[in-house]
Length: 396
Image 1 (cartoon, rainbow, N blue to C red):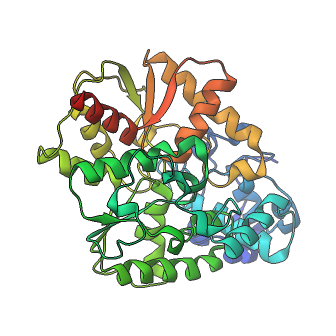
Image 2 (cartoon, rainbow, N blue to C red):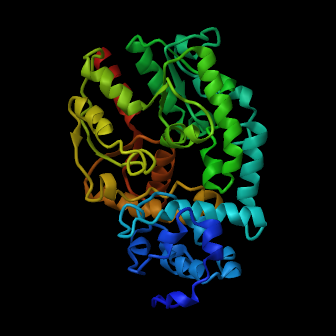
Image 3 (cartoon, rainbow, N blue to C red):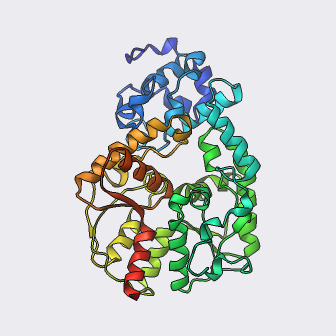
């Protein structure tokens, strides 16, 4: 596929109109290649993003729908923040997934299974949703906010599917609920009344299925009477803050990522912290950083932990490299996710840090696997785990 600009007279806007949120702007693409060079998974795509735009503009529907390019998009928006034309690249990739799904053409089997799993079981793992509190079973003492009898609270901790059902990251919700209890926060969790936020469906091109999840989750929070919902999962946070308002009323409910909430708590000196004598770097999750603009709060929490030496990576904040775990790419091709994670872990290793802290359970899973596969001796953790370690240090 040539990257040479074509005369506008040969453009066929029909396909672009159907799949691109701002198709007229798509026609302004000058084929600079910025999106392709910014994309963490471009190396595995059959067409570079800029080539796909050219095919869209030419109305090459069969070629577009049979491409793997949009199924390998992590929706990290690294391309979008750099596009000189301001094209909604990530949204176009999602729209292409949606169009392919509607047409039933070249949809990965895993994506089809994911859609049915979430809408049937209300979580991404396919487990019985009644077991959604399984992560709390080995806590030394179950906080009141995790017990079934607390049904009214000022704060709801929305845990998310990965932390609820994947043992490798159980320590994230375990750490946060113990921190909240130490800080005497009146909080609760929703147990089986919490459904998947719907974000995995949205990025799989099945956004029409998100509305049911959104309305249910908001209704449950209002039933509890909470004024605030906090999240350790940036994808859940993004869904509530950016997608839910399109399908339901979330007015009157304050939405915060856990690091934002914890930064507020720590500013009030309500928690005693002990030393954690280690070197750490921070990985900005795409859904929290580039897509939601939360950069400072996680770093403020890390700065509060005594003894912790923080080293910034060369690619950070808006320029941070995706971990590879977004956009359901792991469902389409796990090897691509692993490859991107390996690249990010090489950047982590260059800092000399012992820990790479993130604020996302999926990032932790993906980065830890990248470290294992590439034999990099760095441990991936979540910020709430480090904070809980510091609180425990103060109590010993």
